[in-house]
Image 1 (cartoon, rainbow, N blue to C red):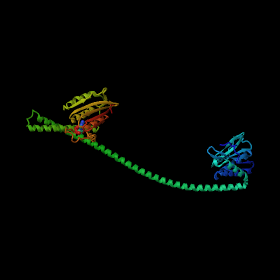
Image 2 (image 1 turned 90 degrees about the vertical axis):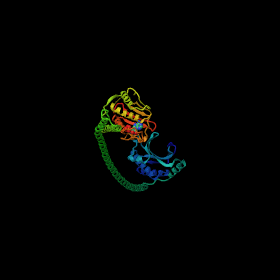
Image 3 (image 1 turned 135 degrees about the vertical axis):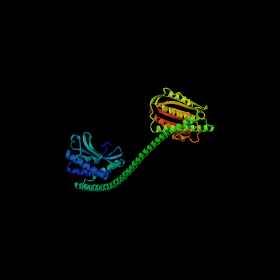
Image 4 (image 1 turned 135 degrees about the horizontal axis):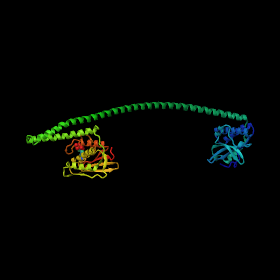
Length: 453
Ligand code: ADP
Protein backbone atom coordinates (compact mmCIF):
# COMPACT_ATOMS: atom_id res chain seq x y z
CA UNK A 1 0.00 0.00 0.00
CA UNK A 2 1.09 3.57 -0.59
CA UNK A 3 2.03 5.69 2.36
CA UNK A 4 -1.30 6.94 3.70
CA UNK A 5 0.24 10.34 4.27
CA UNK A 6 1.54 10.67 0.74
CA UNK A 7 -1.80 11.74 -0.75
CA UNK A 8 -4.13 14.34 0.64
CA UNK A 9 -7.51 12.89 1.72
CA UNK A 10 -10.44 12.99 -0.67
CA UNK A 11 -12.61 14.51 2.01
CA UNK A 12 -12.41 15.37 5.68
CA UNK A 13 -15.14 16.06 8.15
CA UNK A 14 -15.75 16.33 11.84
CA UNK A 15 -18.05 14.10 13.89
CA UNK A 16 -19.18 15.97 16.96
CA UNK A 17 -22.96 15.92 17.30
CA UNK A 18 -25.80 13.47 16.57
CA UNK A 19 -26.61 15.13 13.24
CA UNK A 20 -23.05 14.48 12.05
CA UNK A 21 -23.80 10.78 12.03
CA UNK A 22 -26.21 11.40 9.13
CA UNK A 23 -23.62 13.51 7.38
CA UNK A 24 -20.86 10.94 7.79
CA UNK A 25 -23.19 8.30 6.40
CA UNK A 26 -24.27 10.46 3.50
CA UNK A 27 -20.77 11.61 2.61
CA UNK A 28 -19.50 8.03 2.93
CA UNK A 29 -22.00 6.94 0.32
CA UNK A 30 -21.10 9.83 -1.95
CA UNK A 31 -17.37 9.11 -1.74
CA UNK A 32 -18.00 5.40 -2.35
CA UNK A 33 -20.03 6.24 -5.44
CA UNK A 34 -17.39 8.72 -6.64
CA UNK A 35 -14.56 6.17 -6.51
CA UNK A 36 -16.62 3.58 -8.38
CA UNK A 37 -18.04 1.23 -5.75
CA UNK A 38 -21.29 -0.49 -6.75
CA UNK A 39 -24.60 0.53 -5.27
CA UNK A 40 -24.69 -2.33 -2.77
CA UNK A 41 -21.15 -1.60 -1.64
CA UNK A 42 -22.00 2.09 -1.27
CA UNK A 43 -24.81 1.12 1.11
CA UNK A 44 -22.55 -1.29 2.96
CA UNK A 45 -19.77 1.22 3.60
CA UNK A 46 -22.27 3.97 4.47
CA UNK A 47 -24.00 1.69 6.97
CA UNK A 48 -20.71 0.55 8.51
CA UNK A 49 -19.61 4.19 8.80
CA UNK A 50 -22.79 5.37 10.53
CA UNK A 51 -22.53 2.46 13.01
CA UNK A 52 -18.90 3.20 13.84
CA UNK A 53 -19.63 6.95 13.95
CA UNK A 54 -22.44 6.38 16.46
CA UNK A 55 -20.19 4.21 18.63
CA UNK A 56 -17.39 6.80 18.63
CA UNK A 57 -19.71 9.76 19.26
CA UNK A 58 -21.27 8.05 22.25
CA UNK A 59 -18.07 6.40 23.43
CA UNK A 60 -15.36 9.07 23.10
CA UNK A 61 -17.33 12.16 22.10
CA UNK A 62 -16.62 12.14 18.37
CA UNK A 63 -13.90 11.80 15.76
CA UNK A 64 -12.22 13.39 12.76
CA UNK A 65 -13.22 11.49 9.69
CA UNK A 66 -11.11 11.36 6.54
CA UNK A 67 -11.62 9.47 3.28
CA UNK A 68 -8.64 8.22 1.22
CA UNK A 69 -7.86 6.16 -1.84
CA UNK A 70 -4.86 3.80 -1.64
CA UNK A 71 -3.24 1.61 -4.28
CA UNK A 72 -3.39 -1.99 -3.13
CA UNK A 73 -0.65 -4.54 -3.78
CA UNK A 74 -3.24 -6.47 -5.82
CA UNK A 75 -3.33 -3.71 -8.46
CA UNK A 76 -6.70 -2.48 -7.20
CA UNK A 77 -7.62 0.66 -5.29
CA UNK A 78 -8.95 0.57 -1.78
CA UNK A 79 -11.27 3.10 -0.27
CA UNK A 80 -10.06 3.79 3.24
CA UNK A 81 -11.88 5.73 5.93
CA UNK A 82 -9.97 6.78 9.05
CA UNK A 83 -11.87 7.90 12.14
CA UNK A 84 -9.45 9.57 14.58
CA UNK A 85 -11.23 9.70 17.99
CA UNK A 86 -11.30 13.03 19.79
CA UNK A 87 -10.40 11.29 23.06
CA UNK A 88 -8.25 8.22 23.31
CA UNK A 89 -10.14 4.93 23.00
CA UNK A 90 -10.41 3.01 26.26
CA UNK A 91 -7.36 0.66 26.28
CA UNK A 92 -6.78 1.49 22.61
CA UNK A 93 -9.40 -1.03 21.50
CA UNK A 94 -12.55 -0.77 19.49
CA UNK A 95 -15.26 -3.40 19.10
CA UNK A 96 -18.34 -2.34 17.11
CA UNK A 97 -21.62 -2.59 19.06
CA UNK A 98 -22.99 -4.73 16.33
CA UNK A 99 -20.70 -7.62 15.38
CA UNK A 100 -22.16 -7.69 11.85
CA UNK A 101 -20.57 -4.30 11.03
CA UNK A 102 -17.16 -5.84 10.40
CA UNK A 103 -18.65 -8.03 7.70
CA UNK A 104 -19.83 -5.00 5.70
CA UNK A 105 -16.27 -3.95 4.84
CA UNK A 106 -13.05 -5.78 3.97
CA UNK A 107 -11.19 -4.54 7.01
CA UNK A 108 -12.18 -2.87 10.24
CA UNK A 109 -9.80 -2.33 13.14
CA UNK A 110 -7.75 -0.01 15.28
CA UNK A 111 -4.29 0.99 14.11
CA UNK A 112 -1.67 3.27 15.46
CA UNK A 113 -0.82 6.36 13.43
CA UNK A 114 2.11 8.13 15.06
CA UNK A 115 1.18 8.38 18.74
CA UNK A 116 -2.55 8.30 18.11
CA UNK A 117 -4.89 5.46 17.41
CA UNK A 118 -7.32 5.51 14.58
CA UNK A 119 -10.31 3.34 13.70
CA UNK A 120 -9.77 2.32 10.11
CA UNK A 121 -12.02 0.58 7.65
CA UNK A 122 -11.39 -0.20 4.02
CA UNK A 123 -13.10 -1.76 1.05
CA UNK A 124 -11.68 -2.84 -2.26
CA UNK A 125 -12.73 -0.75 -5.25
CA UNK A 126 -13.49 -2.80 -8.36
CA UNK A 127 -11.92 -0.36 -10.81
CA UNK A 128 -8.25 -0.76 -11.74
CA UNK A 129 -5.77 1.40 -9.84
CA UNK A 130 -4.75 3.19 -13.06
CA UNK A 131 -8.32 4.47 -13.51
CA UNK A 132 -8.02 6.61 -10.40
CA UNK A 133 -5.14 8.81 -11.47
CA UNK A 134 -3.84 11.69 -9.41
CA UNK A 135 -5.73 14.06 -11.72
CA UNK A 136 -8.99 12.12 -11.31
CA UNK A 137 -8.54 12.09 -7.55
CA UNK A 138 -7.90 15.82 -7.56
CA UNK A 139 -11.12 16.27 -9.54
CA UNK A 140 -13.04 14.11 -7.10
CA UNK A 141 -11.60 16.08 -4.22
CA UNK A 142 -12.85 19.33 -5.75
CA UNK A 143 -16.27 17.87 -6.59
CA UNK A 144 -16.75 16.48 -3.13
CA UNK A 145 -15.56 19.76 -1.59
CA UNK A 146 -18.08 21.64 -3.67
CA UNK A 147 -21.15 19.48 -3.05
CA UNK A 148 -22.87 20.64 0.04
CA UNK A 149 -23.89 18.00 2.49
CA UNK A 150 -27.66 17.50 2.53
CA UNK A 151 -29.93 17.65 5.52
CA UNK A 152 -30.88 14.80 7.81
CA UNK A 153 -34.16 14.65 5.92
CA UNK A 154 -32.32 14.10 2.64
CA UNK A 155 -30.35 11.33 4.21
CA UNK A 156 -33.55 9.81 5.59
CA UNK A 157 -35.09 9.87 2.11
CA UNK A 158 -31.94 8.26 0.69
CA UNK A 159 -32.06 5.62 3.40
CA UNK A 160 -35.72 4.96 2.56
CA UNK A 161 -34.80 4.46 -1.07
CA UNK A 162 -32.09 2.05 -0.06
CA UNK A 163 -34.50 0.20 2.21
CA UNK A 164 -37.02 -0.18 -0.62
CA UNK A 165 -34.28 -1.44 -2.95
CA UNK A 166 -33.10 -3.89 -0.27
CA UNK A 167 -36.71 -5.08 0.26
CA UNK A 168 -37.08 -5.59 -3.49
CA UNK A 169 -33.87 -7.55 -3.51
CA UNK A 170 -35.07 -9.69 -0.61
CA UNK A 171 -38.39 -10.33 -2.35
CA UNK A 172 -36.76 -11.41 -5.60
CA UNK A 173 -34.37 -13.62 -3.66
CA UNK A 174 -37.31 -15.17 -1.83
CA UNK A 175 -39.04 -15.87 -5.16
CA UNK A 176 -35.86 -17.47 -6.50
CA UNK A 177 -35.63 -19.53 -3.34
CA UNK A 178 -39.21 -20.71 -3.77
CA UNK A 179 -38.46 -21.81 -7.35
CA UNK A 180 -35.31 -23.58 -6.19
CA UNK A 181 -37.25 -25.28 -3.39
CA UNK A 182 -39.85 -26.47 -5.86
CA UNK A 183 -37.11 -27.87 -8.11
CA UNK A 184 -35.45 -29.53 -5.15
CA UNK A 185 -38.69 -31.17 -4.12
CA UNK A 186 -39.22 -32.36 -7.67
CA UNK A 187 -35.71 -33.85 -7.75
CA UNK A 188 -36.32 -35.43 -4.36
CA UNK A 189 -39.46 -37.07 -5.60
CA UNK A 190 -37.52 -38.36 -8.63
CA UNK A 191 -34.73 -39.72 -6.46
CA UNK A 192 -37.21 -41.40 -4.13
CA UNK A 193 -38.99 -43.02 -7.08
CA UNK A 194 -35.67 -44.21 -8.51
CA UNK A 195 -34.62 -45.50 -5.12
CA UNK A 196 -37.89 -47.40 -4.77
CA UNK A 197 -37.48 -48.91 -8.22
CA UNK A 198 -33.87 -49.89 -7.51
CA UNK A 199 -34.74 -51.49 -4.17
CA UNK A 200 -37.49 -53.46 -5.85
CA UNK A 201 -35.10 -54.64 -8.57
CA UNK A 202 -32.52 -55.53 -5.96
CA UNK A 203 -35.07 -57.51 -4.00
CA UNK A 204 -36.16 -59.27 -7.18
CA UNK A 205 -32.52 -60.13 -8.00
CA UNK A 206 -31.97 -61.31 -4.45
CA UNK A 207 -34.95 -63.60 -4.63
CA UNK A 208 -33.59 -64.96 -7.94
CA UNK A 209 -30.14 -65.58 -6.42
CA UNK A 210 -31.62 -67.31 -3.39
CA UNK A 211 -33.73 -69.55 -5.62
CA UNK A 212 -30.68 -70.29 -7.78
CA UNK A 213 -28.64 -71.26 -4.74
CA UNK A 214 -31.39 -73.53 -3.48
CA UNK A 215 -31.49 -75.19 -6.89
CA UNK A 216 -27.71 -75.53 -6.92
CA UNK A 217 -27.73 -77.11 -3.47
CA UNK A 218 -30.39 -79.53 -4.58
CA UNK A 219 -28.47 -80.38 -7.75
CA UNK A 220 -25.21 -80.99 -5.91
CA UNK A 221 -27.02 -83.17 -3.37
CA UNK A 222 -28.47 -85.15 -6.27
CA UNK A 223 -25.01 -85.40 -7.86
CA UNK A 224 -23.51 -86.59 -4.60
CA UNK A 225 -26.24 -89.15 -4.21
CA UNK A 226 -25.79 -90.33 -7.82
CA UNK A 227 -22.03 -90.64 -7.41
CA UNK A 228 -22.46 -92.53 -4.15
CA UNK A 229 -24.93 -94.96 -5.65
CA UNK A 230 -22.62 -95.45 -8.66
CA UNK A 231 -19.73 -96.34 -6.34
CA UNK A 232 -21.99 -98.62 -4.31
CA UNK A 233 -23.24 -100.32 -7.45
CA UNK A 234 -19.71 -100.81 -8.81
CA UNK A 235 -18.50 -102.14 -5.49
CA UNK A 236 -21.41 -104.57 -5.16
CA UNK A 237 -21.31 -105.81 -8.75
CA UNK A 238 -17.56 -106.28 -8.82
CA UNK A 239 -17.66 -108.00 -5.47
CA UNK A 240 -20.41 -110.34 -6.66
CA UNK A 241 -18.51 -111.02 -9.93
CA UNK A 242 -15.25 -111.85 -8.28
CA UNK A 243 -16.34 -115.28 -6.93
CA UNK A 244 -17.73 -116.68 -10.23
CA UNK A 245 -14.78 -115.34 -12.26
CA UNK A 246 -12.31 -116.87 -9.83
CA UNK A 247 -14.28 -120.11 -10.11
CA UNK A 248 -14.03 -120.01 -13.94
CA UNK A 249 -10.27 -119.49 -13.74
CA UNK A 250 -9.99 -122.41 -11.28
CA UNK A 251 -12.09 -124.66 -13.47
CA UNK A 252 -10.07 -123.75 -16.54
CA UNK A 253 -6.87 -124.59 -14.70
CA UNK A 254 -8.39 -127.96 -13.67
CA UNK A 255 -9.41 -128.75 -17.24
CA UNK A 256 -5.96 -127.93 -18.58
CA UNK A 257 -4.23 -129.81 -15.76
CA UNK A 258 -2.16 -132.76 -16.92
CA UNK A 259 -3.79 -134.94 -14.22
CA UNK A 260 -7.20 -134.45 -15.85
CA UNK A 261 -8.44 -136.22 -18.96
CA UNK A 262 -6.39 -135.12 -21.94
CA UNK A 263 -8.01 -132.51 -24.19
CA UNK A 264 -7.93 -132.34 -27.95
CA UNK A 265 -5.73 -129.60 -29.33
CA UNK A 266 -8.74 -127.44 -30.19
CA UNK A 267 -10.31 -127.98 -26.77
CA UNK A 268 -7.01 -127.02 -25.13
CA UNK A 269 -6.93 -123.84 -27.20
CA UNK A 270 -10.52 -122.94 -26.26
CA UNK A 271 -9.88 -123.61 -22.58
CA UNK A 272 -6.81 -121.35 -22.87
CA UNK A 273 -9.01 -118.58 -24.34
CA UNK A 274 -11.56 -119.01 -21.55
CA UNK A 275 -8.80 -118.77 -18.93
CA UNK A 276 -7.20 -115.64 -20.39
CA UNK A 277 -10.59 -113.90 -20.83
CA UNK A 278 -11.52 -114.79 -17.26
CA UNK A 279 -8.26 -113.43 -15.93
CA UNK A 280 -8.79 -110.18 -17.92
CA UNK A 281 -12.24 -110.01 -16.37
CA UNK A 282 -10.79 -110.56 -12.91
CA UNK A 283 -8.35 -107.68 -13.44
CA UNK A 284 -11.22 -105.43 -14.47
CA UNK A 285 -13.32 -106.50 -11.52
CA UNK A 286 -10.46 -105.92 -9.08
CA UNK A 287 -9.69 -102.49 -10.51
CA UNK A 288 -13.36 -101.51 -10.40
CA UNK A 289 -13.51 -102.59 -6.80
CA UNK A 290 -10.39 -100.57 -5.95
CA UNK A 291 -11.74 -97.43 -7.65
CA UNK A 292 -15.16 -97.78 -6.05
CA UNK A 293 -13.50 -98.12 -2.65
CA UNK A 294 -11.31 -95.06 -3.22
CA UNK A 295 -14.24 -92.97 -4.41
CA UNK A 296 -16.58 -93.92 -1.63
CA UNK A 297 -13.96 -92.79 0.87
CA UNK A 298 -13.49 -96.27 2.24
CA UNK A 299 -9.72 -96.08 1.83
CA UNK A 300 -8.07 -94.49 4.86
CA UNK A 301 -4.35 -93.79 4.32
CA UNK A 302 -2.09 -95.17 7.01
CA UNK A 303 0.25 -92.28 7.60
CA UNK A 304 3.87 -93.04 8.41
CA UNK A 305 7.35 -91.60 7.82
CA UNK A 306 8.27 -93.36 4.62
CA UNK A 307 11.76 -93.68 3.17
CA UNK A 308 11.53 -93.45 -0.60
CA UNK A 309 14.67 -95.53 -1.19
CA UNK A 310 13.23 -98.95 -0.25
CA UNK A 311 9.96 -98.05 -2.04
CA UNK A 312 11.93 -97.32 -5.21
CA UNK A 313 14.03 -100.47 -4.72
CA UNK A 314 10.92 -102.62 -4.53
CA UNK A 315 9.44 -101.04 -7.66
CA UNK A 316 12.72 -101.64 -9.48
CA UNK A 317 12.51 -105.33 -8.53
CA UNK A 318 8.84 -106.02 -9.25
CA UNK A 319 8.63 -104.11 -12.53
CA UNK A 320 11.69 -105.72 -14.02
CA UNK A 321 9.42 -108.68 -14.72
CA UNK A 322 7.03 -106.41 -16.67
CA UNK A 323 9.81 -104.73 -18.66
CA UNK A 324 10.16 -107.54 -21.11
CA UNK A 325 11.04 -105.55 -24.25
CA UNK A 326 14.79 -105.50 -24.79
CA UNK A 327 14.50 -102.13 -26.60
CA UNK A 328 13.04 -100.47 -23.49
CA UNK A 329 15.09 -99.79 -20.41
CA UNK A 330 13.55 -99.29 -16.99
CA UNK A 331 15.53 -96.75 -14.95
CA UNK A 332 14.61 -96.15 -11.32
CA UNK A 333 16.90 -93.37 -10.06
CA UNK A 334 18.18 -93.32 -6.50
CA UNK A 335 16.20 -90.61 -4.60
CA UNK A 336 18.28 -87.77 -3.11
CA UNK A 337 18.68 -88.18 0.64
CA UNK A 338 17.19 -87.55 3.08
CA UNK A 339 14.39 -89.17 1.14
CA UNK A 340 11.64 -89.30 3.73
CA UNK A 341 8.07 -88.07 3.52
CA UNK A 342 4.93 -88.60 5.49
CA UNK A 343 2.59 -90.74 3.45
CA UNK A 344 0.99 -94.17 3.03
CA UNK A 345 3.66 -96.45 1.60
CA UNK A 346 1.26 -98.98 0.08
CA UNK A 347 -0.94 -96.41 -1.68
CA UNK A 348 2.11 -94.50 -2.95
CA UNK A 349 3.55 -97.77 -4.27
CA UNK A 350 0.29 -98.48 -6.11
CA UNK A 351 0.30 -95.05 -7.77
CA UNK A 352 3.91 -95.29 -8.96
CA UNK A 353 3.53 -98.93 -10.07
CA UNK A 354 0.50 -97.93 -12.10
CA UNK A 355 2.37 -95.13 -13.87
CA UNK A 356 5.50 -97.22 -14.49
CA UNK A 357 3.34 -100.06 -15.74
CA UNK A 358 1.62 -97.75 -18.24
CA UNK A 359 5.00 -96.37 -19.35
CA UNK A 360 6.34 -99.87 -20.01
CA UNK A 361 3.08 -100.88 -21.69
CA UNK A 362 2.98 -98.00 -24.17
CA UNK A 363 6.71 -97.47 -24.86
CA UNK A 364 8.15 -99.49 -27.72
CA UNK A 365 11.73 -98.26 -27.51
CA UNK A 366 13.84 -96.02 -25.34
CA UNK A 367 13.33 -95.83 -21.59
CA UNK A 368 10.92 -95.42 -18.74
CA UNK A 369 12.41 -93.46 -15.85
CA UNK A 370 11.32 -92.86 -12.26
CA UNK A 371 12.90 -89.90 -10.49
CA UNK A 372 12.32 -88.13 -7.15
CA UNK A 373 13.04 -84.44 -6.58
CA UNK A 374 12.56 -82.34 -3.47
CA UNK A 375 11.25 -78.78 -3.96
CA UNK A 376 10.80 -76.80 -0.73
CA UNK A 377 8.02 -78.60 1.16
CA UNK A 378 7.01 -80.94 -1.62
CA UNK A 379 8.27 -84.06 -3.33
CA UNK A 380 7.97 -84.33 -7.11
CA UNK A 381 7.95 -87.93 -8.28
CA UNK A 382 8.11 -88.16 -12.07
CA UNK A 383 7.60 -91.09 -14.41
CA UNK A 384 8.98 -90.19 -17.83
CA UNK A 385 8.81 -92.34 -20.93
CA UNK A 386 9.87 -92.13 -24.56
CA UNK A 387 6.54 -93.59 -25.71
CA UNK A 388 3.97 -92.27 -28.22
CA UNK A 389 2.96 -89.25 -26.09
CA UNK A 390 -0.58 -87.92 -25.66
CA UNK A 391 -2.30 -85.03 -27.51
CA UNK A 392 -2.91 -81.99 -25.24
CA UNK A 393 -6.71 -82.12 -25.66
CA UNK A 394 -6.69 -85.61 -24.09
CA UNK A 395 -4.56 -84.73 -21.07
CA UNK A 396 -7.58 -84.52 -18.79
CA UNK A 397 -9.73 -87.14 -20.55
CA UNK A 398 -7.30 -89.98 -19.85
CA UNK A 399 -8.06 -89.45 -16.15
CA UNK A 400 -11.72 -90.25 -16.79
CA UNK A 401 -12.96 -93.75 -16.01
CA UNK A 402 -12.73 -96.23 -18.90
CA UNK A 403 -11.17 -93.67 -21.26
CA UNK A 404 -8.46 -95.05 -23.54
CA UNK A 405 -6.78 -93.07 -26.31
CA UNK A 406 -8.39 -94.25 -29.55
CA UNK A 407 -6.06 -95.83 -32.11
CA UNK A 408 -3.32 -96.46 -29.55
CA UNK A 409 -1.56 -99.78 -29.93
CA UNK A 410 -3.85 -102.53 -28.66
CA UNK A 411 -2.03 -103.38 -25.51
CA UNK A 412 -4.97 -104.21 -23.29
CA UNK A 413 -6.09 -102.50 -20.12
CA UNK A 414 -9.28 -101.23 -18.58
CA UNK A 415 -8.99 -97.45 -18.61
CA UNK A 416 -9.31 -97.42 -14.83
CA UNK A 417 -5.63 -97.17 -13.81
CA UNK A 418 -5.14 -93.41 -14.14
CA UNK A 419 -8.41 -92.34 -12.47
CA UNK A 420 -7.51 -94.65 -9.60
CA UNK A 421 -3.95 -93.29 -9.39
CA UNK A 422 -5.24 -89.69 -9.33
CA UNK A 423 -7.81 -90.54 -6.66
CA UNK A 424 -5.14 -92.14 -4.46
CA UNK A 425 -2.77 -89.19 -4.94
CA UNK A 426 -5.42 -86.78 -3.79
CA UNK A 427 -6.13 -89.01 -0.76
CA UNK A 428 -2.42 -88.57 0.04
CA UNK A 429 -2.87 -84.79 -0.13
CA UNK A 430 -1.16 -84.37 -3.50
CA UNK A 431 -1.90 -84.10 -7.20
CA UNK A 432 -1.16 -85.98 -10.41
CA UNK A 433 -0.43 -84.13 -13.65
CA UNK A 434 0.64 -84.98 -17.15
CA UNK A 435 3.07 -83.25 -19.43
CA UNK A 436 3.15 -84.77 -22.90
CA UNK A 437 3.20 -84.18 -26.64
CA UNK A 438 2.54 -86.73 -29.35
CA UNK A 439 5.85 -88.23 -30.52
CA UNK A 440 7.80 -86.80 -27.57
CA UNK A 441 6.92 -89.17 -24.76
CA UNK A 442 5.03 -88.46 -21.56
CA UNK A 443 5.87 -87.30 -18.06
CA UNK A 444 3.45 -87.99 -15.21
CA UNK A 445 4.24 -85.96 -12.08
CA UNK A 446 3.03 -86.90 -8.62
CA UNK A 447 3.33 -83.91 -6.30
CA UNK A 448 3.16 -84.76 -2.60
CA UNK A 449 3.55 -82.64 0.53
CA UNK A 450 6.65 -83.81 2.40
CA UNK A 451 4.82 -83.41 5.72
CA UNK A 452 1.72 -85.38 4.69
CA UNK A 453 -1.86 -84.19 4.00
P1 ADP B 1 -5.24 -98.49 -19.17
O1 ADP B 1 -3.78 -98.30 -19.15
O2 ADP B 1 -5.70 -99.62 -18.37
O3 ADP B 1 -5.86 -98.41 -20.52
P2 ADP B 1 -5.21 -95.99 -17.79
O4 ADP B 1 -6.27 -95.25 -17.07
O5 ADP B 1 -4.00 -96.35 -17.02
O6 ADP B 1 -5.90 -97.25 -18.40
O7 ADP B 1 -4.80 -95.12 -19.03
C1 ADP B 1 -5.79 -94.57 -19.87
C2 ADP B 1 -5.26 -94.36 -21.25
O8 ADP B 1 -4.28 -93.33 -21.23
C3 ADP B 1 -4.52 -95.51 -21.81
O9 ADP B 1 -5.41 -96.44 -22.40
C4 ADP B 1 -3.63 -94.89 -22.85
O10 ADP B 1 -4.37 -94.65 -24.03
C5 ADP B 1 -3.28 -93.58 -22.22
N1 ADP B 1 -1.97 -93.64 -21.52
C6 ADP B 1 -1.74 -93.90 -20.22
N2 ADP B 1 -0.42 -93.85 -19.94
C7 ADP B 1 0.21 -93.60 -21.12
C8 ADP B 1 1.60 -93.43 -21.49
N3 ADP B 1 2.58 -93.54 -20.60
N4 ADP B 1 1.87 -93.17 -22.78
C9 ADP B 1 0.86 -93.07 -23.68
N5 ADP B 1 -0.44 -93.22 -23.40
C10 ADP B 1 -0.77 -93.48 -22.12
